[in-house]
Length: 118
Image (cartoon, rainbow, N blue to C red; front, side, top):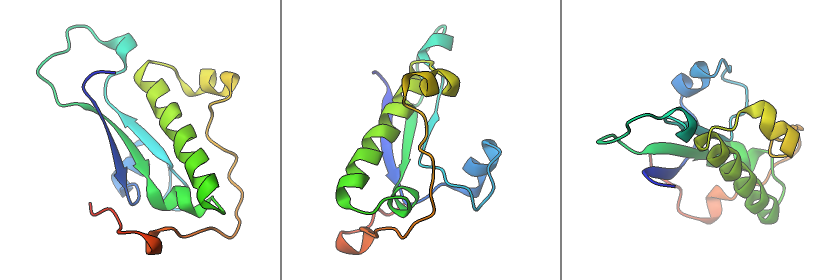
């Protein structure tokens, strides 16, 4: 991958949620912002594509640090796939789709480390 940055943010902005047709109570774990490799022509002198990983939503669906590690890996793979032009339907077919969210008690790892400042 070239000219791509991966960022960890506390949570998505209202604008990011709205751009995907999601409401404020819906969960977004990650987001790819950029032009997929499959739709690029000339591509130069531009800011990097961005993959955002959202800490609080990921922690809200996980029960342990081990689950957080697995979820971050799956989320990054999902967003990297979008960079390579793979859409959600194909990701579902190959098993890298967003998780089925269940509302459960969640782990909060934020208090155990210095939070990322946006």
